[in-house]
Image 1 (tube, rainbow, N blue to C red):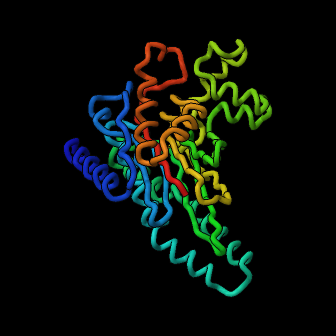
Image 2 (image 1 turned 90 degrees about the vertical axis):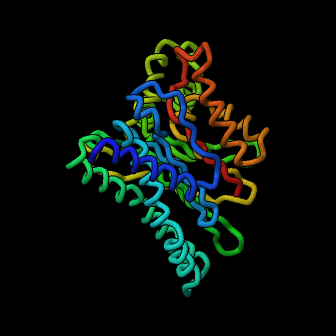
Image 3 (image 1 turned 180 degrees about the vertical axis):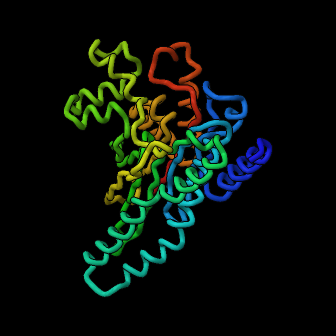
Length: 316
């Protein structure tokens, strides 16, 4: 594909997804350090904020030139086609089938969980087929967190989350901010293998700079950015983590890409949400706060990274 054609497609895709599929604040083209000037002209992130169909998420692509933007926006578009109105009809049919409420909800759980397990496959298939003729897609990678909110009988609500990589989903309930996803990083693998306790993991993960940690833990600080759970040409098995949660009216769903969660601590995010009650304004404030961390004199060495930024906030 010619260079000019790829740029046009990327601009068109980015504009379409941003205008039609994201009801929230636009993603922020952050202070990107790596890549060409053409790469820096595009955001490698795409946001999904579709309250009509209960679909929310953040996708982040990586790759040469416009590829990062293309793969991220392609995932968001694919999700809306497979998990929007068509999935809602299937959910509705299952909820009206014979059986007890518990049985009907169990069928919905199985349906949505199965769908979410396959959420990345259409985009990954496109990435691999494109790489045959377009070398730019050869090293493309994708990570994302996608959430589906479903209304159940008796006024109950269910949150389903499909997750791959280091985008995060948080839930704010009252004064408590809970991380709902597990990072696919080297640091998280150390915790899973019991090399680190939960307390040690959180201390490293939330440190603002390596200097705050013991010498032993300073060596592990960089593993926060060592992403091992992504899609790409060297990944043969794409199995995102899928989790299910009961949620309630008044809960706030917060989805952030790697750039935001690397630059802001959980306390930073919580403090912002407690001050800013409007969801759209909260998205803007969090994205800009994450970008401001890169501009501080204390940027190096610290947890902050220069990169594109995306936040979705939705009050249930």
